[in-house]
Length: 295
Image (cartoon, rainbow, N blue to C red; front, side, top):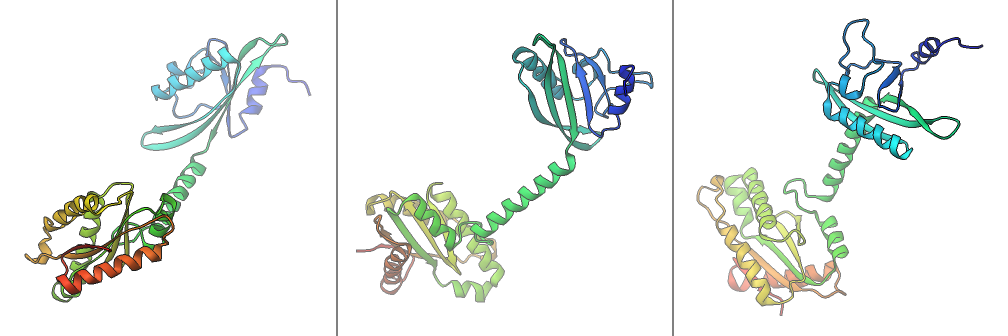
């Protein structure tokens, strides 16, 4: 079958859900099979022919992006594929734009043919999936109450960053008294406050871990002497002492800590065992409320 005019071809192409368009070398539309709602279309006799994206697009940022892409195609002869976000009357759409140069028999560019696909559903689904996967990853790697590393991922993080530094193990003195006196919800509030103070007192490169219950650990990479460690830990202890938790009604809690300077050959369990010994000495011989180094 031979088609006698372009109108017949346009009518056939308009049956395809995607918008197909053609632009000349001045970036002006020759035709488009669909008029999307993001266009400033007028009355029923309105035509896209002879107009640029700047002329007809409601979103001028996307219009400029379209014009820049067109000019780049005309300059280089290279195709352009990209996705835009359109919002009209509170409705968000994601449109995939595919553009290709059209050449004559001599290889000269005579225009641009393009395709617009509505990919809103798949984009929103992908965003939901990514959000779910991010939340799942965070849930699996962090302690749900305090939002710092759980033991498994804290150990993995230490192994990936190197095992030479200060491993600081501590728990909260008389934490059972806090739970029994003020309730477990207040105990949770204390655990959260401790974790937040850990994050604000140590570097982003340090690893903060909740091991379980009221037991925590910090691995400070590269902290290799008692003099250096004391400066950092004094700041941490002072920050804890400054905490004001209204639910405790004036009661001030303390912590006991053991500090072990690890070497690359140490395993996590080695660090834990040695620092736990020092923490126990701190509690037994000094009544807690401070830190001791492993001899």
